[in-house]
Image: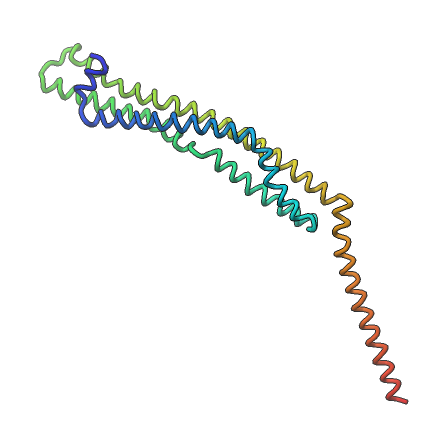
Length: 229
C-alpha cells in the first residue's frame, strides 16, 4: 500500500491532521524565509539607522548641559534598540510553535491511525502479521510528516536567532560609540562656552540684586540723617 491507498482508507481525523500539518508547513516556510531576509537586512543597516535616528536629537540638545544631553541620548538609544529587538523577533513565535507541536500532531495522527487499523482488523477477525504490519506502517507516515514539518521550522528559527544576535551586537556597539561621542561633545570648549553665558547671566543678576540692596541701604541712611537734622 502506498500513500494514495492510505489516504483513500483514512478517516476524517487523519485527513484533518494532514491538512493542519500542511498549513503549518506552508506558514513556517513563508515566515522563516521572510524573517531571515528581514533580519539580514536589519543587521546590515542597524548601525547607520541608529546614527541617523540619534543625530536630530543631539542637534536639539546643543544648548543643554552635559548631564541632560547624556540622559536624553541614553533614553533615545534604549527606545530605538527596543524597537530593533521587537522588529527582529517578529515571526519567531510562529516558527517556535510549529517546531514544538508538529511532531506531536504527527504522533497523534499515528496513534489514531494505529487505533483505526487495529479496530478494522478486529472487526475482520484476521490478526496475522501481514494484516497488522501494513496498516501500522502506513500510520507511521503521519509521524514522518510531523517531523518533516518541524525540521525546517527549527532551522529557520535558529538562523533567525543567530542573525538577531548580530543585529543587537551592532546596535549596542553603535550605541556605545554614540554615547562616547556625546561625552566628548560635552567636554569640548564649545560646549563649555555655551554653558558660560548662562552662568554669567546668573552672576550678573546676583550682582545687580546686591547693588540694588546697597543703594537701598544708602538711601535709607540718607533719609535718616535728613530727618535727624
